[in-house]
Length: 276
Image (tube, rainbow, N blue to C red):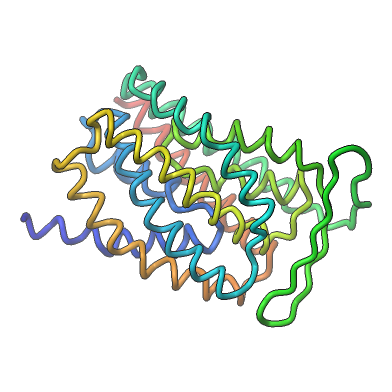
């Protein structure tokens, strides 16, 4: 093994820590890094590696969040089921996208989502709970005694999760950067519950996409799998660190950190796509 490959382990720690902190799995950090490290790799190889790491990270992070008592299992179960067809569809479509087109598409997605979060993160007014058909109510008390009460239309969460599954598998990002803001702003989840539940959903969603890439041969017993395994080895302890840090940060701070990171990474990737 090339000794330089061992540097992928600390990369995994960083991805796992920050990804778990914001409930995003870390794929939005990892994919652009992989695109810069391996510029000639096929988009489906990059996304397959990223989804493998996101799966390892999300599984580890979910265990940590479960100990904190912040996962909404009933909602997360429905969301995870809804992501299945989208995740498979995204894994199929990515194989037909050229490298530069993938770079540009990914950069645009990051910048748009980041700007959206910058504006939405400023909204702190209390909103009336939704009413009408399909609205479910949840109340969760975590291990520290904090109680979170909220309500949302379950059907809307299922439809949104279907789209998140497709986009996340297509881009190899796990989907948390989309799912967390959607849950927090459109479904009115408390941010800490959204990040924890999103991680629970990510474990299933990334696992689905990874399994598909194993079956189609993109992530067989090859160099790509070895590299992904090294990053995943770092992401597992990193996820535990991120979950601990999440208890010490305010929800608004988490969203703002996520927004800033998305825009910066998106701009860097856009420059790469423009210069070839």
